[in-house]
Image (cartoon, rainbow, N blue to C red):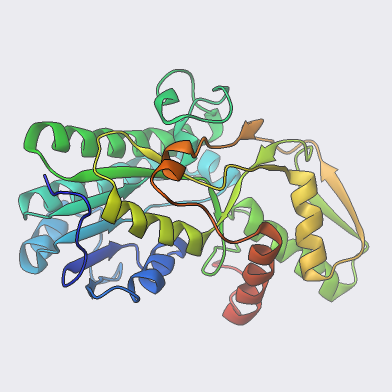
Length: 318
């Protein structure tokens, strides 16, 4: 097992999922490190194809892996595409982690999701609350696949001495998000909805749910910085939360997005839509003890995310 601090300099670093929101943020952050970045697009490498993954790893043999590839989406996508979310994410985790092991990868980071925690777990969510209660039903398939990935990293560390670690990001937003009208996460959905309302002159915007659930939001470039910090400074079997340690109601958050977009109309709530988990706030004390805290304030992050939405000119991946 590698020592701490782990030296990234001069290493070949594979970012799995480098075109996604998290992966592209990791690429931006790693550009500041003296590393050889290794990538493969989905057309070049289907991470669900075990034989292809094993062949690619055998040829490239990356020394460091950030496993940020996943099939992701909001509540509707998670609840509708249940088989795909379970199969694809299980396959990605199993194929990449085992291939990394077979090909002598020095260090791997598996990125999970805060939905791995029980729906009604005590708040703030501590790392040791995983598997202590039932999951939120709407995203259970995704959560189970992520839990399997965490347990794989843990098992390979235990059995083979692999320096594999797992991190749990909170709700993310920022450049590269998915703005699909049905399948997006709450931040991207609200940015799109308020932008379209302002552009069309609509007097009212409907937000799904009651507006009362509390959520924590982390700017994706802060996540990337935390991941690089942990890759260098963390080597333990226990997973580690990445967040801000602060939360806000969806209603309050919607008003912040409306202000950033310049929408001045009314906001109403569709209470027939699901709320999801009542509260999701991560306990980030373990991360803080390792010397890292988020630096992007929510208002500033939303402003940057809206700028990215405008510049990307791809309002939906239909």
